[in-house]
Length: 478
Image (cartoon, rainbow, N blue to C red; front, side, top):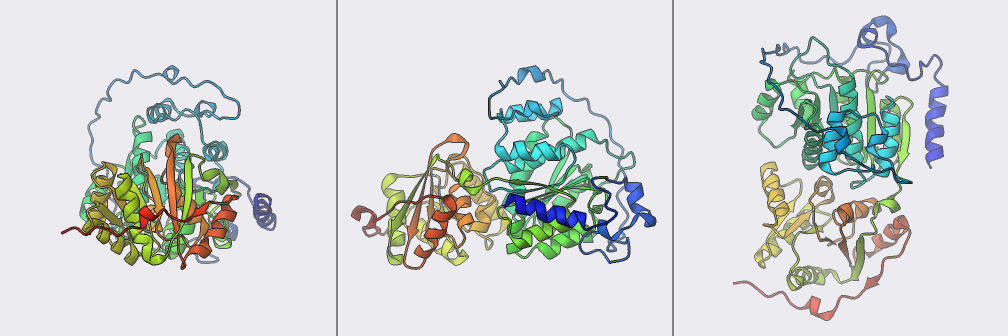
């Protein structure tokens, strides 16, 4: 598959005469009318012109006078970060990363690169575009963040700079994923001096606006809808973006965000003038068409799903009638006294009913779905992370961006409709070398989904009948 994808991009490149290869013209060159070529236009630009969509003409906020604040003395040295070379593994030391960034990597306890980090950084640190097939838990977030941070540190910002002009833009489909990426970016930038901001819907717009107006923005992480709100109001200008990252492109397709993403990309410099990275759990035809439109001669990196389903996750399947699923769920949690359990269901109404029944029956639970207001989702996630709440019930979309350490069990109340979602679900447990357990309920309505999952994993999952004691009636709380 990898060879076919590369041939597709190479064929596309060869058929375009006069291609300038990897040459990235300067901002000044790109804005000269004589330099416009059809091959350099992004999807959505008007053919035959070099004009982009008109944007709000709100004047940009001038630079406020700022007193220089002395940085606290940092006595850390790269020599303090000792990682011995190991056959078959790539160290972060093997790349030319700044000491400030290496300090952040050291604090996070990352000695060696994951496979996708090693492969992606090998290309993107040389300025190439990249598209990556990788799922949650592979380390892809750190891969594109480290590359982005390095680009910004190696390229001084322009002398004339305004508020609301991010130098790097990261777009993700869900609020939870944006928050997680922004937190990772803050940790990696602890010593670099780069500013990170995040915009998501469902939060106070004015509060986010005040943040934007208070300081320069180096890295902006946002959901498409909220970013468009800021852009169309003239608060955010995207023509200075040097690096653009599209995370979980397949999920953005599923959620109908691509028209919004197209609008956003039209406001950025044309491809070839910016570095673009696109990540997806699957390389569908639609995803690859988007990649062709938005990238130039990209490096193609694939991490196979079978390498993602960690050996540290013990997988079980119970064959159970639909009417008995809730009894099985309740008894598994109650009789084993499990905490930090994540339960997945396919529909939002199903998630709501499971959460309500668990709460009624004395097991603390919260739900995560698109129907839950953002402030409640944040509060629920904090309670679950701190161990105050035992069970989180989620849809696949809401669960994609949830990163909580020490989740002991993942339970698939209903088997997912696509095999890739199964890998995403069980990836919530067994992280960072810890052991975990996934249990799937296969009923008459969803057992058909099991064979495709096994085909993706390349192995059979043992299917068994639940013990009788796990099917006893749920005691009613009065």
